Image (cartoon, rainbow, N blue to C red; front, side, top):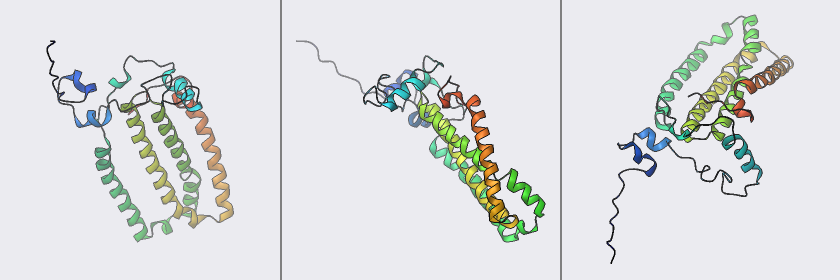
Length: 219
């Protein structure tokens, strides 16, 4: 009769065993979370010829940028969802305090109309550029080959969304002071033109996110 082998329980997750140490909170909630890399021919375990699978096979697994182990990437700051919210909560509280202070002091009413016009034409359109950054970060995160890379891009996406919200909120008051609806339409038209120019430039900066040669996302 063969001897019965007693299996010893693992002390941590199988993909973290090789490190032979207690995993950090960052490693537990960030590393090796993607499931679409189990079968590179069918990333989402559906028909390999499905449009979505074809896209991921080309732009994630078939990218020109190669690495032996994408999952070895680690964010130097080890930011996770919990710590990200802790960090940004304090910053958001500070920004909202400034907004409240401006409102209480009726700060915008004291601004020179010419300066308000300059802000409306040059600062307000930034929300469209920030939205482009948000969408680019979301896309790069979605097609990234490792969850630790995805997380970095998604935190960048969240930052860009806050920039969009704050810029739109802040300029909503100043534009109403200086412009009538007809002029406001002209400002929006100019902003859209700037946005398209930025998207064209982004194709060079973020080629990975536009389906060409890949670049390494930056945390």
